[in-house]
Amino acid sequence: MSVQKHIGWGYQFNEFACFPSTHLKIIILLIIIGLEAQLLGIVVGKERPDLEEKKDSLVRSIADGKKKLVELEDEILR
Image (cartoon, rainbow, N blue to C red; front, side):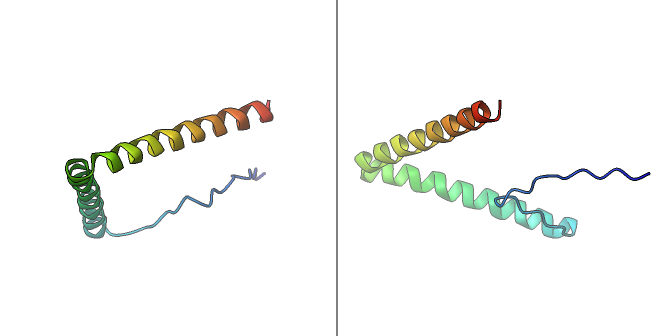
């Protein structure tokens, strides 16, 4: 007897199979991109602190919105 269960698939989820050497290169690339974003934030913070403050405010607002969305989805599903 075989039991099948449907698993929901999110559109933002991607899975890739790759060799360990390729996996290492991808990890290094993601680290470099993250460091570049942090460096850009530091530079913008020095040259245009108003823009950096506005970006931080928008990031917090987006995070709060996502949290509220999850709470509302959970409430609807109950």
